[in-house]
Length: 217
Figure (cartoon, one colour):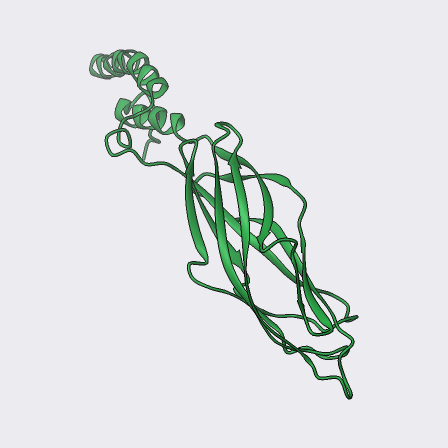
């Protein structure tokens, strides 16, 4: 079978041209910063405390319609001298971790607040304290024509005892997509339309010449 060429099929060539106009990879660029309510992010109880070390302000980008990008949120650490004759420090504390998100291109911004609870008992050597985030753990903001979806992660974790290596790290997963406009979604980009308008007459003429040559042969 003879291989199919672009000149032998103008419709295929036009489809490829249209596809080329929409195949570029686009990204949503954004900056972020964190805060807590109440502030500062140290929550005392008895002889101890649970503290959040907030991630520094930063920037990132997410592929439009692509996978999630992880950004750091906070690390959780504890302190206590309870134990023995001293009762354990008990925690049942509600708080909010707030993300300030700014779309770089438009400078539009929004605040997304994720409510959480620290609950459990703490001594100098043990911890039953857990960190739990409550629904909705995924929130959205439309900024600069981009729809940002932000999910707090993990929604549940164990908080380490004092002086134990490691910490409970909190992060956010950010996805971005284009804002959908009902009428504009099906309209080809002007550049793709211009390319197609220029290419179709040329392809059609070449196709006719090939047919004429075959007929004479």
